[in-house]
Image (cartoon, rainbow, N blue to C red):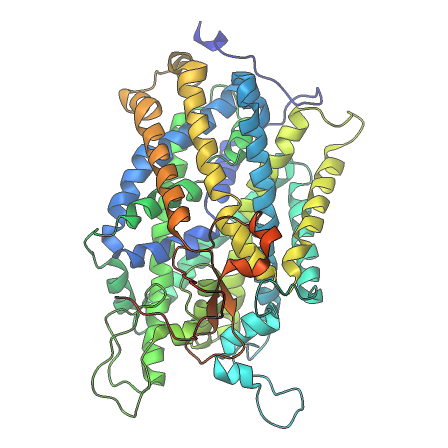
Length: 582
């Protein structure tokens, strides 16, 4: 009988009955909240406009159909069938795969450290948004109070100065650790306290909080979308976003595949943990397709909202620079692409370059803390919009943290590492405390550099390997026939040919291709990172630095490269000339 196939499901590691979701909506919102994160807001729009908007959606959808959804289905089904966390699931399938579960827990721990640090920065901006005017709207007076403004601020921009100096107080390079910033340490403690209060009782507490943390970002996105579409320049921003381009750059396929992979939070173990609390007869196939489509539609929805506002910012920029018409080509672009300017100027203009106002970053923290914050300054009622924006980012990240912490705590509970007399609240508290203490290094003045290292190389390559081992473990170790029988037991019908072919052939080959391509990018990318330059002109607030500055002992511990767009051929600080694109 199909329902008896496979290892026997387990309850909680402590011997008590396994918790259950109060209703199906709680589970769906938790999975959506874990999948939909900050990357949907600041990474997908960047990739979409970088590779020509509508054209990028072609490889993106291909990766979604043949890589994302099949892998997502595997995680939901195996977690629901075996009712264990990541370590328990893969150990049950084969003792030799137990390391995959342990690796998922380790990566979730590392990601939680820097992910919640980003929420620390968001919280700092959120608290500073309750001021009028906003603190990043003008340069502060110099330390001597002579009536002059800070030279460093005047040489860059108010938003860049507030981010790099007043928030991070960043050092010149990664070798100078600097001191712990008290304001960031306090916000880090507050962020971890919020996370602990939400995950204190596992899904019993996160299931209540998820109603707000998962739905509030959609409300704010809708508000920004409505407001953005009514702003001048919004149409030009959307036209640029969705203007198709020929897919000549092979990197677009790698970026599309990895975006799908990380956007769905695959191989972290969080979805396995969430699914383990489902009833045995839940239709996990329908859940996998629904959640994956909602995640992708959210990325597209966020892109429209973001680019409508950034189109408005580009119009304001042209007005500030004295252009008679707004630049309509290359309004928003990756690092180093210039805006085409009309030949007629109202007054002499040294260079029409959106990078000079945005600090060079149109994805990640550059989009959230520099470009978008400057766009908010030009909107009537700026403090209110800032509160909404950073409140949205905080709740968006908080939902993802629920999944990250569940990836850590659920396997530990299943393994029965603690005595039954020790309540779950204590284990959760110890996990959060350990994460907080480990993340203090990110509150140093050089913390932003280390966070960038972690973000780029602590997880991506490991997760690709884990996902490959997961699909191989299910299709070839556990057995596709055996797994199909389990699917019949849970959903009442056998997987179609599409599922069987993708699990057996297509997904493993795609993951192997991504792995090889990713390794090739690392090998051919010079060791470098981007450092804040205290002697810069307005267009280049950061310069490229070689990572070898760390010294020989650190070279063995830092990953191979820090950024595919950066080059640093020598050990000297590079010239502060803005990058240009051929």
